[in-house]
Image (cartoon, rainbow, N blue to C red; front, side, top):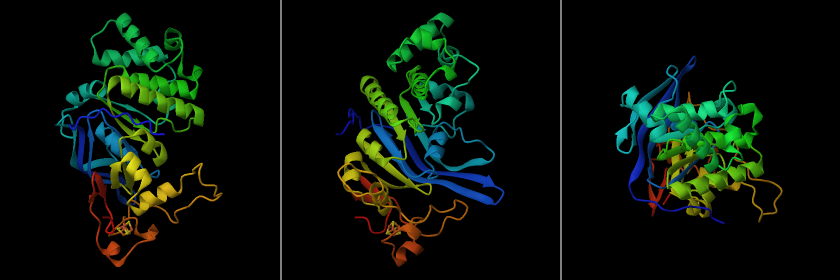
Amino acid sequence: MSEVVSDISNRPLLEISDLKVRFQTRDGLAHVVDLERLSVDEGETFGLAGESGAGKTVVAMSIFRLIPSPPGIISGGRILVRGRDVLSMREEDLRKMRGRKMSMIFQDPMSSLNPVFTVGQQVTRVIRTHERLSAREAEEKAARALEIVKLPDPGGTLRKYPHELSGGMRQRVMIAMGLSCGAELLVADEPTRGLDVTIQAGILKLLNEIKRETGMTVLFIANNLGVLARMCNRVGVMYAGRIVEIGDGADVFRKPAHPYTMALLAALPRAETRSEKLAVTEGFPPDPLRIPPGCAFRPRCPRAAARCEAERPQLLEAGPGRLVACHLAG
Ligand code: SF4
């Protein structure tokens, strides 16, 4: 059953265009992201899917200008948040924007939380970086944030160290930190990775509830397209640093248009199919040091034609609300 929350304006909160991210390596320049366009409307939950290494996390980190340089280089493009380009913004303005306008939940809550500080010290530090509050006011606000993410005994949890909490509780603390300053845009980078299935379900449910209550905009990153299609208004699928398909979450799930999206969905276990074997896409994504000309999916694509080798497909409209980068789409 769909869990999508829809209260979306048609005003874009996040707009990315022609984003190019490279990493300098000993063997040459790795072309990690070449993203033509992506826009997320105010109030929308947008899911970004794709295999590990597709460039999803690099996109998320670019939004916050957190790509380590060197070796990373954002060599082109624009990332507008509420119309302001974070890539050309002064460092001081960007710092104010992080936390107050946009915040991020990272993949691994254990390495994102500092083991030598209590939860309270860490959450209040985030709050006091962005708001002029006394220590007591910040602590009250931190306790409220822990309450929102349904952590039992918020006062007691604030006094604990990260190692005293379970993985699911640590991730809830990370979500509380993300929400504590009322950010409009939340980027959740595989927030359930490494958690067991029941905890994952709890975190996803929580994110949906918070979204329903606050109306914030969410960019949700995950490997599992099935989860995203259920949670998100729209989804985008990345392959080898590019977006290959964008569309309504349920529509893409029902009727994928790009052969890579089809392959991702065919590899998902489904309760209704009793087949013991899951479809596996042969081959590997291309080496970012040697992205082939033409379509990067061609060596793995069962539909590849001569044109696919010579010409790179652009991300074009292939139906209402659907964008697809494939010569055969539409
Ligand atoms: Fe396959 Fe060609 Fe489409 Fe690429 S452009 S996905 S190779 S059919």
